[in-house]
Length: 350
Image (tube, rainbow, N blue to C red; front, top):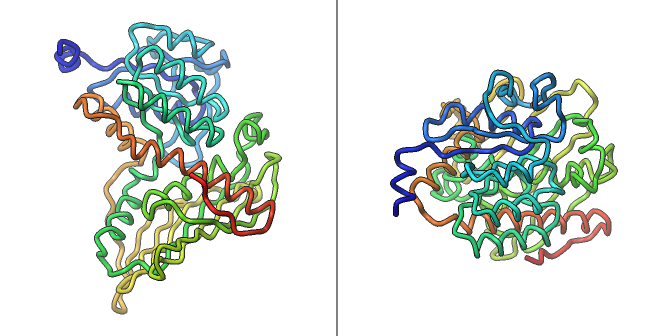
């Protein structure tokens, strides 16, 4: 079609809604991709639009992009950005409780959509997004960055290919102090650390192992007013051969603690241990020896956005399996919340 020929010769035009730490990170990444250009940004905070204030990230390399010196259209209302007919891709980095309305509006205007994690505030809204995606000819991606993070890609491949034999156990941890600010202080908007932070690990379990049959979780409330520290066991009853799978997520650590994420994966013939804190390391212990594994340079955000741009340029249909998985991850999270509240094993209904 003529549209595809045009795509070959012209850059995809991007509009970013929300200039918090993720919006700024995405802004930075688009500047490094030759097939795209950011033509518009939207944020309800004027100082972020004019570059006089900037959000911070929790990982080095995050949120380095800024709007200062960018000649782009600037909107205080994201809906005005969506109505700009020049824009091909709408990148949604607003609060989780607003994801659904912006995704719905962008798809209605025939825009491709990249939506930050988690896909939506509730499983109900996430299912509506899936329905919209199924009816649309546009591409839509849920930005679950761990699926593209080199050390995590390595783990998924090791599990799938039985590189070190059968996987016996998987344990994930993600811990930081409370991010602060109005959005994170309102469980209704952010869903607490349970949905905003721990969603990464729950999604990765779902991505690697498939949907668990049930969960058993314990946790406590924190500064968001929702569950801000959680420990979950994911229960797979498919066979007795299922690995032991658990994860812990918290943003209740004391101020100054910093941020870390890690995993330990134990296989019949090797143990992988990964840690990102001040540095990033992946170690393999096998046969009495421990070695450092050299990882591909770069962060998940970069590979995820490149994958999305490539998907649009190639014209392949949206990967609905990955999108549905991101939706079902929210169903798992909601079961975890019920498990914490009732101190019982809760079956996943998704």
